[in-house]
Image (cartoon, rainbow, N blue to C red; front, side, top):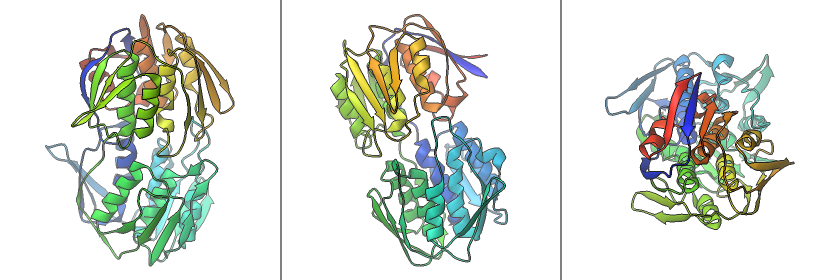
Length: 421
């Protein structure tokens, strides 16, 4: 198990390239279960979560290779296995997105329940509701979702939940509907850029999808989908993390590949905090101010402020002038990082689904423990700002979503190194 050792207090300067979007790549790779022939991908990040999904696809009959130019190639050469095992699905909740394409292409699927999640309850009831609306017979037995159908039939699917639409559920139903008979309408569909990217891939394969990016999508089923070449969009969460890194260190960083369209809510909040942001030809440039202002922010489904950047913003507000309130509307329990940030000198109090952040003049280095992917990123950002040495333990969490983050931060002038525990 590795840890990061960070010597804080250095402004970051330079250019950093954003990688491919993990949350777009995962369902897109799962959608290769629908394809006839080889799919070739560009801009797929080399992450722990991606490797987990590729292992699942291999168990389901995929032949996988990487080209010399970094492209990823996937072709389904054996289609008899329909089981995604607990041993792999339990490692990453997003791997549950193989359910829809498996069922649509092979007529049956047996996928392990994804289990609990440290950031809060994340049920799969909407996934199952959506697939049942398309005619799937589904039972949950012995920890597995077992589903079957002769051929799915189009219908109207409502995917509203207590926290709004479901991103992964929308992906599962959308993938299944591409091979269903007739037309499917998804009402209250997720609008995230990652869903739009999945739709782009399915359409390029020959799918018929209208309304991606809106709350209502129409999918007309086709007989078959063909393998194609495709490039995954840049990762907006990684881009937002680097923007906060530049801001909190008082630095001057250009985040190449960052999409201002995908980050409009983040950009708006950062400007309220006092951060200088400038759109460039190939990304976004951030300059950290001498003083930061307190703001109130609520996480919401896209295009609102993303829950996946909540922890990073909290670090920034922990050293802002005044009192900020962060309300978590997506995952009300997603505050595991609060106690660890307080170890570094922050003054944050959790009250129900909100965190009250009293800005302090500075943070001081200390050993801290990462609890999940985005909390890990937040602790790294805090270490970059803190005086002295910060040790971030259990960084295997951050390897799930950030490729070689320590090397990229080091290229911007950070003093950060990876060490074995």
